[in-house]
Image (cartoon, rainbow, N blue to C red; front, side, top):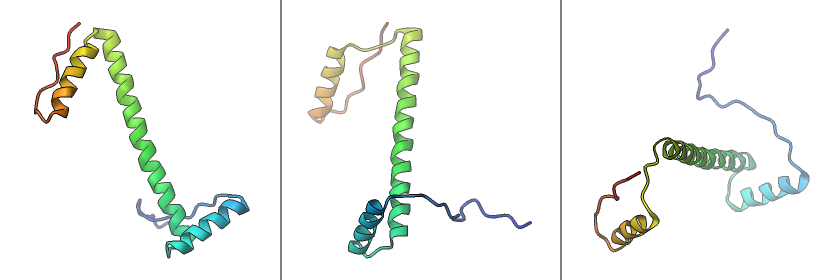
Length: 99
């Protein structure tokens, strides 16, 4: 049995209502693209965005777990002062964490 490369496109069927289908067609026509291209691009952009959102969420969970385990933190005043310096164009290191 021949193998399919991992990057080969494979057909997938989705069901959308008639109104959405017509809206996709109108937009695709306006962009001189096919509805198929528009839907593929929309899915790719959605997945890219959601992967980044999930990575951010996982990072926040790890940071929260680390804080609960060790208590290392900076105060709001310390963070505000650091951010104000960055906003003013100064290249400064973040404040030291403390328990």
